[in-house]
Image (tube, rainbow, N blue to C red; front, side, top):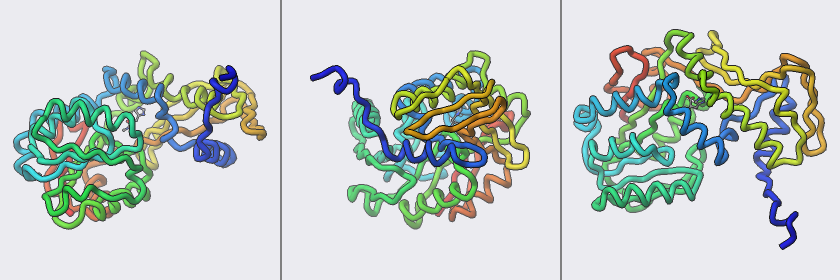
Length: 315
Ligand code: AVI
């Protein structure tokens, strides 16, 4: 095979469209889902192990410390349906606590999903694992095998915070439509807290979050017909007080142009590309969001510092 063909990268038209459309906005922005190519997912994994990034550590601790109570409130057996492919720590914790007969992870990345499902099955021989390869923000069907079973949805990690409230409400409503009446939802939500701690969690001293954010430019250069000067941008994590969220931006440190797919985008020093939102919720805000999404909160577990909430809601 000629070398040029071997090296060819297939362009995802949705990525191309989101980048071109996003960069034309008054505040240039690119949807956060594109941060997660293979390298981005590895870097996110690294982030979850950083001292400064408290959410993973704190949520895991809450789940571990309250496993029996969570299981008693959510109900044992039936089907555990996870929105996302699952973490190597949190998913086994909930499986051991809830003892479901079926585990249904839903993820867009088929390879990752099948790998993690196989590992889980090996560790829990009695468990039926039915992975579903789907984008859980769009309509999809659950496996027939779980029809009629008690269903508990599982959406940890505060991923709901990466959606603006209107989309978060839509997503919660679609979870309810998929899980049906009498189901439950276990969801992690990060709390508003000391701003220095929040900023440090999204701009760690090791520079891993900066690398995660800047990898988006590397991806644009690799996957699109693009010339972007990656060195002309730096990572910034900003707290948006009005909207209660941390925003990740790529900030131009000098005037620069990006040539992408035949179009040119000019950036003056200080201009930014907005790449991610991470909303933080107060106690009432979290409950109101769930209610707007069709879920009634019935129990909540928090850590001693009230940094993070793990909430059980019923349909
Ligand atoms: C995946 N999500 C919950 C992370 C968060 O905290 O919003 C993504 C992340 N971005 C930077 N650090 C972590």
